[in-house]
Length: 184
DNA sequence: AGCTTGCCGGGTAAGTTCCGGCGCT
DNA sequence: AGCGCCGGAACTTACCCGGCAAGCT
Ligand SMILES: [Mn+2]
Image (cartoon, rainbow, N blue to C red; front, top):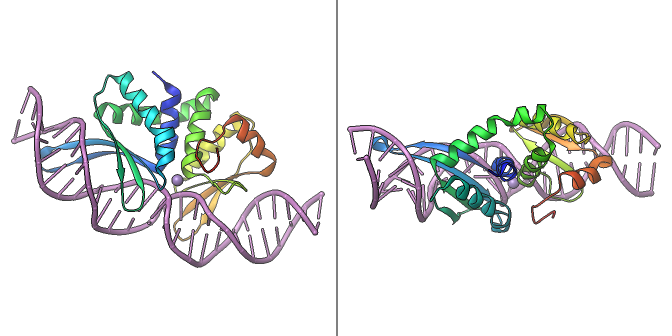
């Protein structure tokens, strides 16, 4: 099983989510979604990894690319994938605690590709969920990469941010790297 | 005087959950 | 009757973007 692909998809899932949907007559759906304004990143970084995981699971579920009103969406409907991703996500704090860097670098890259500053000038990472940012800071520390925060950046919506100081940008690029077309 | 980084407003690129369908047991 | 894949899309806001200026060297 390709843990690196799972780790990247979990990080990238910050731009989407896994949903256990309940419908009428007891019907249900286990849907995992990644979204992006440009389809390129979804096709290059998300789709192949997702297909790889489906193959490993022996699943016949379809990977669907959908053009929405405000963004593209790549989607899979599979209880197996849903369970794999949600269970794997729960294990991330343990991986950080043990500094499993070969896996963590993929999680961090996926996370940054999703939620990171892509101006090329600064390295920042936003999220409402302070705990995920705290985890990111801890994970970065495993690589010797310093990060400021998290602190409250958008007081209107309660969005927090961390920032990798300029002295550590090079190290982030070398150790973690980028796949998003705006940065890669 | 150039670089760094906390702060903050703009608005769109995200996220989330509906709908109707079909298929399997 | 009860559940799980499929295709679509409406709906709200959480991100990203980017400028400003105080602080440092
Ligand atoms: Mn994003």
